[in-house]
Image (cartoon, rainbow, N blue to C red):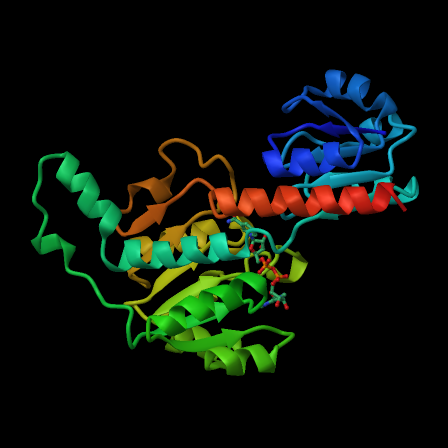
Length: 304
Ligand code: NAD
């Protein structure tokens, strides 16, 4: 049986496939025409956020049994078309949770202590000591919106930092909340009482622009907003207004409504905003875990 690996994959994952006796065809991010050729006689395909597995690709792959995303999210896969053909679609939703959580906490420190700003000034030859007064995280209240896999990991780290935890989730996991010493509250209370708000919800119709003008206005003027979930969970225009008018003190953002973030975007103009290019899952550990997890799932499905 043949497996098409159409995106970079950890060596351990490749070995799992080879050891199971599959022929591995490795071609990084093929264009659609090339992909249409490659899929003709494969039983499985592994992708990351690219390439796109469209209906046309699926219809060109008569032997296909499984499509795997070595990571989270299935945005680039036509899941409906796969379902119609009885093709299984798998991913590794938990592989990067810790990595995303660590980045979220890193962004909290970066904004709270103006680390990125200080670094920029140092490179300009400026000793910006006076402008770089910050705040400690210990004793502050962290509001976690979406207490799932990543939210829970953030809570564990925040607890170790001595932060108080407020949680908001329509499906509250009380046991986990108890474990991290967090308290479930409604969204309004969380926004009003938190010193830092961090978002870890999926992007679904109910969470589109969940953080809008009205909700940003509820936050403390000293509060920091962290978003490592999906860009469209926050209304970018409202956030820009909030930063311009000082409704909140700063933001740390890994995800954007438009990615890549266009050059000279208004968000790049704020000194109190730290930006990263959607690197939440970009660690060696997360990539290895994701690769191994989907390789094992493929072996299981194809050997059924
Ligand atoms: P998860 O499914 O484990 O947790 C999400 C939680 O959000 C669940 O507990 C769910 O009940 C809750 N939720 C659903 N609707 C809600 C609402 N309206 N308000 C509040 N909470 C709500 O997901 P996860 O693995 O923790 O991922 C969270 C987010 O992180 C997703 O948006 C995912 O796309 C994103 N993510 C980003 C990166 C990155 O590179 N920055 C990497 C991986 C995942």
